[in-house]
Length: 202
Image (cartoon, rainbow, N blue to C red; front, side, top):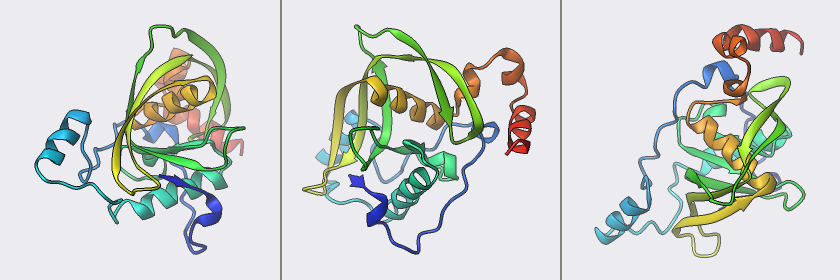
């Protein structure tokens, strides 16, 4: 499932981004969708079709794309705009202007991967960048709705480069973490005070 800002309804509101000190709990599973591939196969065997995007998810996906695009982000997790669902949208910079929707994303580390330290910013941590270690190659797993057939498919793909970093960043949010969890101990200990200081500099 892919969405562009230009295809969204004009009346769609722009959500405010939740600051990092409030992102301290894992996002909830989406009840309309399976949690993993095993559950997906079991529910399909039990007769569930998964042949169209649930109507409850469409406006949420649109809100996420609008928020990411309007705030000049390359991705956003649902809980960053107050949607308590395990989903995110990502576009690969320099490759496409379309945002791809990832439902129940997770990943494992590929055997050829290395830790790479690079600066990262975050919509939930305004006016701040810090060096964050990320794996260079990951095996990403998620669900998405096929743009041609409309059916839910279980995806598994190796990600590298910027896409791997962005994907790990958004999954962190869905697990209740932000780049501040990689910061020095004094910042981690008092995220709220640090965020208030950043906001005051806007």
